[in-house]
Image (cartoon, rainbow over all chains, first blue to last red; front, side, top):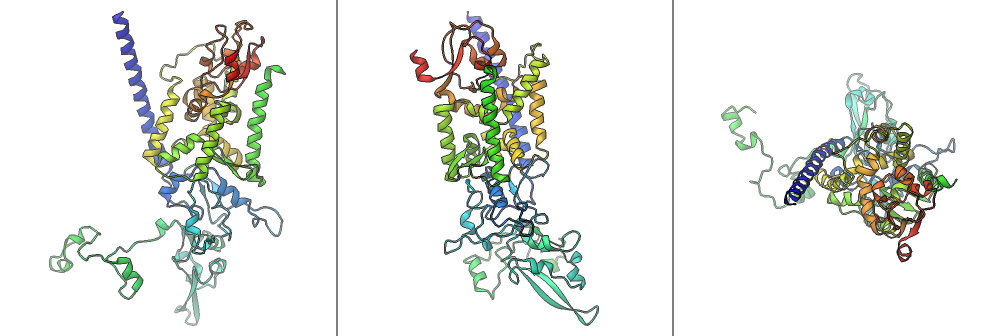
Length: 278
Length: 268
């Protein structure tokens, strides 16, 4: 009898060890695959979306935003009377984005910046944050959305060649605020003007109507997620002439320099005196 | 007709629900919107999948109250009434694995008993817990990354893309790999519903006196370990892994099986 209970215990130990081991194996594979699957960086999310890292935690992949988008009352083509495709798509296998999450591709269908923002209040999980697109008066305000930022590639923008094109400027729902036209003299001809589109990142919502409107074969103005189209000067660069910027830096002490690299370990004069290479 | 009564009812329910979800996107219907992850019934009542909700909570995100309420409603429904009925009456993957199972019988693949030592029916509970751990580590609902259930459902509503390959993989696995491999061994969502539905009211009841031990029920049952009482005792199937699919009742020629309410079943 003692021997059989010994055998039973040994068997129990072995099968438990096997289960734990196989679970660990699956856990490693599962974690690795999931981490890769959510790694798509250049994804444009609906208005009000939390920062990507939090968004991927929060989104329950229900599709209510995409359904609200395509079925909104304003999404009827005035000429044909038929429904147009929605802006928001649900990522599926082959889209190379985390499957089941909403995204949009402005060159195909941009965000039309509906006043009532139908996609945001329907979000049950909080992945689309209504507060981030609600103004001081408590009204939904699509102009507060930051889905991305329009970026101009000067070399392929024909306005920078000197040709007359203001398609993106005209298409912008925040005309003269998010995109303005800067006038410059065309020295090549000596008698014409450049009308150059300039994007203002504090106003641009990233709706992508400019990208959709761009006349070049591949859009010369396009939307990138803000994380990838903006820089950050850091606290030690201050606009001394700007009260707001002074407040941003606040009570910072000058010896707390956060940017650490090979250069910051030496004093600036060493660059000349010691001929330091960087 | 009697032989497929519950099978037909289940297919009508499954396909009917998919039609409602499809119509919500394609035609703007307000009956049942969203997906199983989170839905909106009649435009007001939130519904949410309990295990998916747990995954989101595991990432550390404080999820919206609509989802919490929805998950509570669904949990309560299956806890009190339905048991594991989600798996056989709602889930679209059930149609895929049922087809694989049926083909196994037609092609006589079951005749050669193969011992899948490494894959036991309790693997799903390990995966269920693991799914929550991976969600916490990776920072996204981990089962949803490849869940064939919602991939198939979203595929039907929004278009499949390459997502169809996951559904095909499940079909091939169940057909040529392990019998009832996905739904009966691996699916962590099914595991969650097995736990939720353990004490539910609707139960299959066995009548030992009427049973002729033909074992037809055990052949069709996708979780046939729950039918241990066949030809032994007159008791109800109380195991949470029973999906209340009713196939055993359909195929029983002796009226030895039928749905009953748990409390009444115990009185008799």
